[in-house]
Length: 204
Image (cartoon, rainbow, N blue to C red):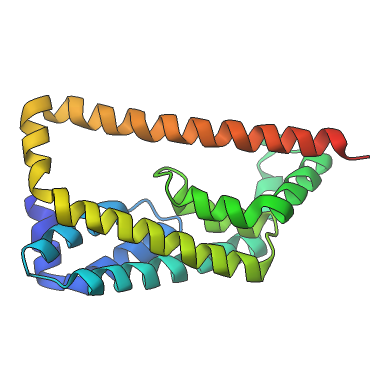
């Protein structure tokens, strides 16, 4: 595990996990996934508690996404309209709003497992007015699933990371991870756009 990550978690423990995961889910570009992997790794070493890392990460991700939802609901639409080069027409706003009204809670859940999408899904859900109560349920379920997954990967495979890194080489390893994340994102967006188009074509 990287020295800076080990030092951060060793000194600040659960506060580091909470702060970074919270900010990551509030749309800040900080390494929330990396902190969860590191927390799982240190839990395997006995430095941290596995279940405490999962509970801390879940609470932080849930609160961060709720904050993102509020920001999207309060400021997202008006900010999007001010970005003139996007040229989002009113009918597109209505179509996206219908899409998130119908599929938004499920999108919130599955987007949790797409590395490049989950930090902003709360913001998008709020921007397109996903119903609040279903959002809370699917957000909590998604956050718990994603935090548990990343923490357990760090717990069981943290030591093998260095083996993979030395075998593939650091550049090749990160290229594989980025490619996998982009491929997953592409599949997700393809299905989302298809559903979006179908909803738009069926509208009066």
